[in-house]
Image (cartoon, rainbow, N blue to C red):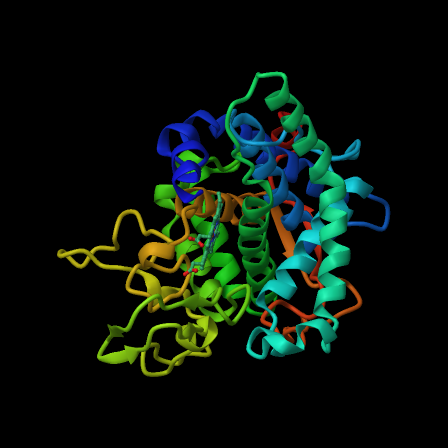
Length: 377
Ligand code: HEM
């Protein structure tokens, strides 16, 4: 599956070919937020909703246009005039995030299988309900593909839909929501990121993927969010197939290996002032002590547990990086963000037994580019 994915969905050639589709989705996101700003009494934007739907639409587009994969629609249902998600899209994405919550949740029956039938923590019931909803949307597409096999139009099975949708949507949206929340309470980093965007892009056009190599401060901010707020504390559990040594530790065959991402990111033995939001710590110098030209989000040394490493490394590093950086860049370059009028600071509590933000972030947005720039899309 990973091979098909690497060759078909996220190969450099495919990503280049799908560039236009990603731009359309970035424009769509910007138009949606712009329309929210212009609503009466408005400017209030549900950042979680906007970011999750941007990520969902980008990946649906990639699946749709990658012709050997299943998906024939950017939207489920009609979508909305203002570029926002329709009822069906909200239902679909909510169900995917519910599955993700259960995927990462601790369940006693994973370790004591004889308890599975009792469903003591209710995970099985919740997961069944969410899966049923996802299937409501995915099955017609899969049925359509089966018909194509029967008609002889297709000859092999490559339905990667569920895995990819689930693997893709959570990280970029969670990072942006946290980043904006932190930044609204700590406006100096916001000012610096916006200044960088203005100096690289100016104010006469939208920021584009071609600007990414020059947006190093923005990328340090993203790395810092992933360090402090990974989408979930526990990386998907790995099982050792044989006795093995990692950094002088013996990992016996059949062990469940659980890596705690937040513990790695916040480890004071690795990071100075580890709980502080300090994007500058990621700026890399080259031999002449100049700032490294094109900082990457990936860190194979695993001091920053973003895409993992080794055999199970995330196959979507390039696409995931592009999606995340563009989400941040469009939102910060296109809009001035403030704490909602009736609040003084943003509540940064984490969800119970999780690392996502407890309350969805709602923030006040104002357009900061000339009106004609927003009319182009
Ligand atoms: C910022 C965005 C993303 C981040 C931070 C991220 C991070 C990760 C991490 C930490 C893993 C677990 C690796 C392990 O088990 O050790 C993973 C797995 C995976 N990711 Fe991503 N990912 C991102 C975007 C994407 C995208 C865009 C795709 C697809 C196009 C994708 C597809 C997958 C798949 C299929 C796996 C499972 C790989 C396996 O089990 O061998 N990811 N990702």
